Length: 554
Image (cartoon, rainbow, N blue to C red):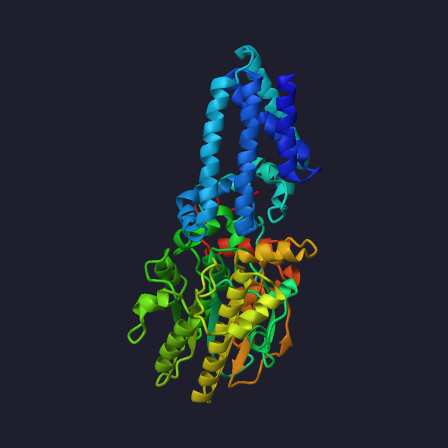
């Protein structure tokens, strides 16, 4: 009787975390596999099943925590990230959540010890245990063939199948391959012939300014209203704008930066996406800044991070950003200590535009400037906008959604919109003869949108949390387009910048532009065979260096 109750309890716990009848048999097969493996060591069914059930609940729990903060579930390829700064980042950003995880881990350790010491049942002969494990393994493999790695990989952004997704990743070659080096998961065996280069549509070479707005999304995605100043920022009346599909949620801004600049999806590299600024330095030989450099542009990065952050300096240098200015490089009167207390966009963007205007005052060379902000990063429990500023806008946000964190997000967004409106006017008025194309976008949504999504109970949409915005504005040149544009994937954003600037496209960018119709607003998630063949072409031409023996996923 005790054994039966233990088995029912373990299956019930897995069923509750799975939230999916379709994949429940595979999850149960995974439960039995772990139980059979543990049986080899503990020698009785009672402890093996109890420990297997506890392990399943622990895996599901960690996966739910990850899902709530990244909109992606736990897989085996996430394990190396624990040693790449992810855990310290979570501790710093979400201390209460990580304290809960720590307490849960301690309780699991005590419970496991208690089971091992006091829950022993009748011992089973090793001659029985080994064959049982083999049978469980065969059953797990067969269950995987029916509803395993391939189908569960498609549910990574859905709030279900937490345990089965992790178990499926254990036998997913694409997950394990990421441990060995840099590998593309969406690459064909046959290359795609490149398109012919496309000539310039204009004799001008406008300055191009691209601004990445940290954790900024369009509240209207969730049906929340915005005021005119925010609307003018997200959807400029005299510019082009639309929704932007990104690969990440809650953090990992460099993955959006990578996608925009290389025209590739960071998701194509699996767990290596987190490492791309380290692993990828010197391995990507076609990029937006390299293309602009070949057209005579001076390329510059201005980052709100310090020079030592991640591997920014080396990676950006390797893809063609010749001048890299970090927040600790700005000269007085910029006060880095005062800035880092809030990461205010009012301070940072003013310093960026000031540095840019000084360099273009006596230099006719066309400029490419990439600016990275950090103001709206979570958590939003801290009030960074000083009391007395934007209080009316904060009240507007609270009336739209009674959530203090959303009100703080909105107040920061209003500060960004206000300073940008002023700086844009200054750029246009102070340099009336200098054509400039400005593209700005949100790199990912902050974690608080997960709570917004639950609060508003909108129809389920696995991609909603991966949508931000982009806007393109033209200063002192005819507008390349106005009104709502096509919804885009961030991998296409650099190509669109070249098109809207009227610049020539080399065969690589011309071919990438031709994929817009194939992939629509997605890139990685697209099933386009032409995209996969394009990746093969890039590898065959040596424009992407992959480590030996991991050049493609079969």
